[in-house]
Structure formats: C-alpha cells, structure tokens
Amino acid sequence: MADTTDRLRRLVTDELGECRDADLDRRLSELDGLADSALADDSARPVFAVLGDETRYRLARLLVAADDDLCVCELEPLVDVSESAVSHALADLVDAGLARRRKDGNWRYYDATELAAELLAAADREVGDA
Image 1 (cartoon, rainbow, N blue to C red):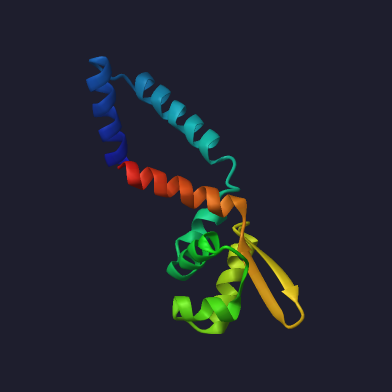
Image 2: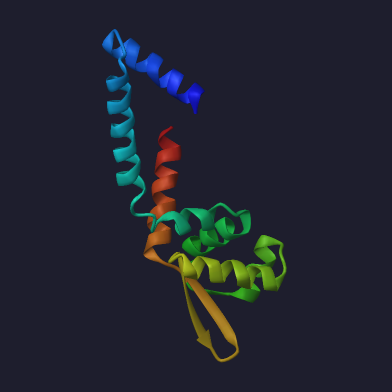
C-alpha cells in the first residue's frame, strides 16, 4: 500500500505542483467514491464471467449466428467437448441471460437472447474499429 500511496502522492504533486497530506486524502476519498459508484451494481459480472470460458464463448457465438434454435446434439460436434460439458456450459449461458432453453419431448433446444446478440455485436464493432 505504501508504494501505491507514494506513486499517488507523486501524481498529485505533478498535477498540483505540491502535495500535502490533505491533498492526498482528498484524492483517495474521491477514488473511494468512484469505486463505490462504479462497483455498486455488479449485476453484469456473470455475463462477462461466463464469456471468459472458451466453450461458453463459442456456444454463445454459435447461438447468435444460428438462424434457429439448436439442440445440444447439434452443438456438441462444433465445440469438441462432451455432451455433458456442452449441457453445463449452456446452462451457464441461460443463467447469465445469454441463452434461452426450451424442451420439446426428449430434446432441449437453445437460442441466443437479444443481450447475447447485442453484446457480441458491440464487441465486434469495437474490435473492428481498433
């Protein structure tokens, strides 16, 4: 923590020309307020966490690209993991609000939500503009 505070003190000194303890305390208080505000609503965290896994990311991409909903048995050969792993990954996508599931007899079908489509499209736009 001392190194962090020392670096922050140097930054404040560069910005203000000097740095008193009160200046450092004020900046730390501002940063604490920023953290409280920015991190208060953590509801989007599961969405990003679920996409951090390669299998779930690929499944989300496939569901967004598909014209219709897909069965687990159709998705399994596309991601090269077991049916059980595909089912678990899809359940995680459903829980995060990135996929919908419907059951038809013995078959379970999945499709992407609008959130998944918009999130991946936004990411593609940003990466494409970089």
